[in-house]
Amino acid sequence: YGWHFPEMVKVVTDNLMYAKSVKAMGVRTNAKNIDFSDILPEEVEKELKETAEISMGTEIAEEDIMNIQQLCDQVISLTDYRAQLFDYLKNRMNAIAPNLSHMVGELVGARLIAHAGSLMSLAKSPASTVQILGAEKALFRALKTKHETPKYGLIYHASLVGQAAPKHKGKISRMLAAKTALATRTDALGDAEGVTVGLEGREKVEERLRQLEGGQLRQISGTGKSNVTQKKYEKPETAGQTYNPAADMTTTAAKKRPRDDGDEKEAAASKKKKAKKEKGEKKKKAKKENGEKKKKKKKKDKDGDEKPKKKKKAKKEK
Image (cartoon, rainbow, N blue to C red; front, side, top):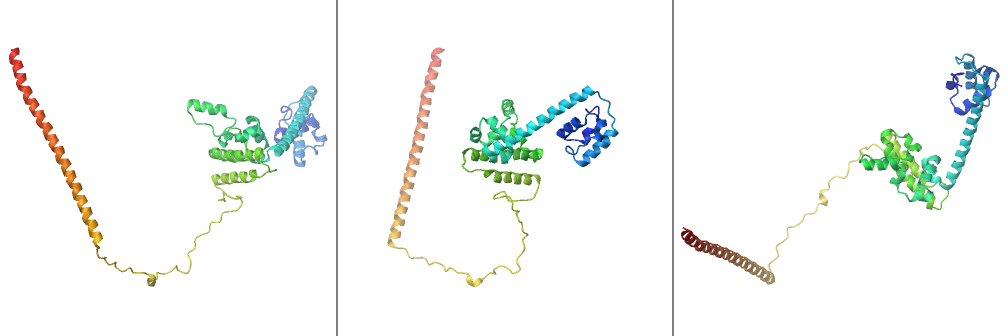
């Protein structure tokens, strides 16, 4: 239809509205006589009618218009079916896994459950597995080729990861995966109904995202709603406690107590022990030196006996 009315794409940007308008209008010359009030807003309708009169598009056959209108019917029915499916999925996810839906959205949550096999299987998975769920092929390729492993899988399509800057996507996906794992376990094994852990988890991830993006400084723990008040330090007008010399305590020099007889005996015994020990060490040293001297002497005697034997042998050979 763009050959017949090329300007319409810029005027009507929504696909469903475009299909409905084309079905109602047919040829662009009919635009001025048709009421689009139930399809388009008033300003867009006015602009469309004005543009239709000055369009640069080519003429189109009646048969082509019929085929285009049939296609429009198909597009409208498919769009309605998609909306119906999404509503069904939303209701089912809010009933089965409300915390997971709140963390990553209904569509991404449903994809994670489908990929894991069941909600219980997803609940058994650690946060590191949830983070790269859906990127198994890239993970094993990276391990095989010894390259960097992927930072995110299906969780990449979550709105919180989409909001983050490219350099922060890895950090946000890691934190989101951790909170998602907790939310999934609450949904699978918890008794509470409705969103409980998901609210707090999402707030913490949003807070982390604001911190990374350089937003306001807020409290990470707790609710995450209250602002941190950083007050400027002001020196108090009254000075601190002054030094009080009266509170000082002086210690008197301790007098040496006189030695008892018992102390003297102990000192003498320890001296005796020390002398005995030294004597024993000296004896050992002397024994060792004597032994070494004897060994050297024996070696010399042996060498002396061998020399004349060698001389006699040499004479006989001659």
